[in-house]
Amino acid sequence: MEINPDSIVFWKWVYFKINATLFYSWIVMLILILVACLATWNLTAGYRISRWQNILETIVSYMRTQIRETTQEKPDPFLPFLGTLFLFISVSNFLSFVPVYHPPTGSVSTTAALAICVFFAVPVYGIRQLGFTRYFQHYIKSTVFLLPFNIIGRFSRTLALAIRLFGNIMSGTMIGAVLVSIVPLFVPIVMHALGLLIGQIQAYIFAVLAAVYIGSAIRAVQ
Image 1 (spheres, rainbow, N blue to C red):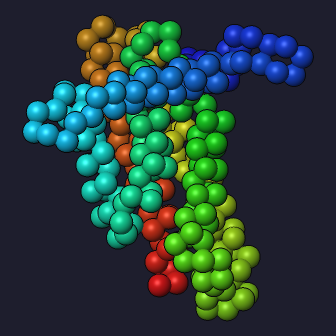
Image 2 (cartoon, rainbow, N blue to C red):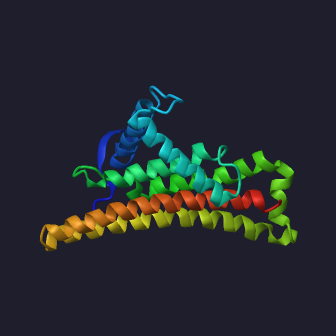
Image 3 (cartoon, rainbow, N blue to C red):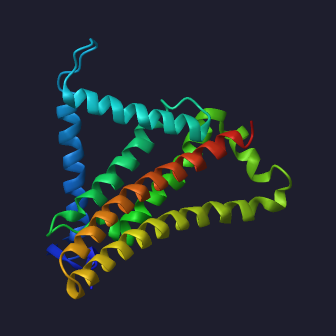
């Protein structure tokens, strides 16, 4: 049975505690910061670039293309937020092959926090692109009576984002743990590799859905 990372407590003082979810979230953030520092340490504009810079430019170029195709907008304003979402989820899921590691995305608190970030990012980007009045017009575009339903729709999309990511990551790790206990070695290895692939797909889907929500909010009143 896969252990809930929220139940693993490393340190506790009165009402404050550091559990596996929080600890490994910090580890992932530290890895991303270190890799970003290394990749941007000696950037050049010539033809001869370092391997780190080549990998960085490939990733950023791919993200820019996906954001442009999804939102139908210039990707630069959205790249920092959506790129950070994708990289955090991707690295969190990829490190699941480490024996003592528990992916923070396997906790509903992490997925809920990421979904809440998307929930607030949608109006922030919408207002920044369109202005306060134009953005909120689409909540009552047809009739003012649709306002509560549109608000409920916003909350339900946020809940769906959190539950989708949490469910897929938890189910994948639980299946892997069960197979390890009942079948020979090579089958869990194959399933674990499949789990890593699914984790990357989930990171992609989460980032794309966030881009879709932001893009739809901007285009709703255009």
